[in-house]
Picture: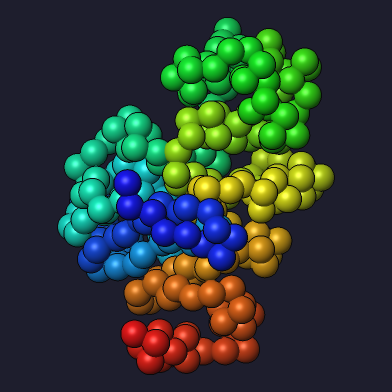
Length: 254
């Protein structure tokens, strides 16, 4: 497995998109280009994907997760071409995806889902540890059903616990702030910064997410994505620095 080390010394998996494009059919029979010739490497611990609505942020996350396939180009993970692999195959390699609205499984308990996620490799104490990591009292949640009795924030914490149980290298979250209260969101934000040995990609407009990212991927409807360190990208997002200056800096460093 090909990994690099981030500034904290944690091994981080390498994710790469090569000339990836994605087009979708429209109701009028036409074709809409959503992403065009996107090439980027992700090797940081915490990456925020942001930009205006319609820029392709969620599409990019779904392409990485294998929910949809690119119209052209390729996607690589740890030196392996995963373009033609589906969601299940990518999950086995260590890529997990969390939907904007977590799925509720009526009749299935948290214990059962964590057991499946960990490939039946943990005892009860081990399963409870996953809940503790995400700030949930295991005694109160381990035998709860994944139904409407759980709030959006609780569901997202359980979903994160499942991702940790899978012991994967990449975790994708699509607008984790959707459907949860401010307190839950603040707690989740603090939790993201504590994850080690994983690449966390978060699609979000929220400044609290962007402010703690190591790298930021800025997608818009007009050109190629701009990728940079947080300190150089924040002025671009806030409008005090041009996209061109970041691109020129990347070319100079390259």
